[in-house]
Length: 219
Image (cartoon, rainbow, N blue to C red):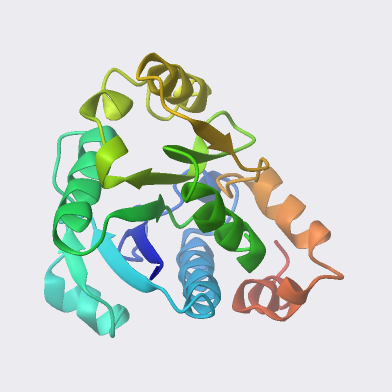
């Protein structure tokens, strides 16, 4: 079955992306770092031979997004909070393009391809596949058309350490079969960024745009 991936992105502009990281790093550099994150993630996703759907926040025009990201279907994120935006994105893709897909953000540039492959493999036997992040959120969520339920996205304390645990509890209440991927680190702070740099000094990701940028700057 064809792999299908939703990715949430923001247009790269100062004071709009990686705001926590910008507290410790020059804001212009943060924009370049974010652009590298997204570029590296797309490079990995392309190796999956997947259909990729880009959902962007509607604080910029579609024309601006198309000037930055081309070659993929672009959709505006719709909803009052992150949960509603994710539900609406899932609903649109699962009712128009496929019967199962995963959603990711743009905070895990070094997530290796085998993790995506594992997510899709496990989605064949589970109702929900979730990738917990080290800060208590999640970096990946996989659902079927039959397991998409609004309650998975409602009454969640978004941007807190409770996001993953609350989502898992809601999935259990729905009697869903759940598979949890290994934990991975979102890159939100300078500490996260330094961790990414040091853990990739001897990995394939060392040759990424993110690492090239970091090697050329004193971060």
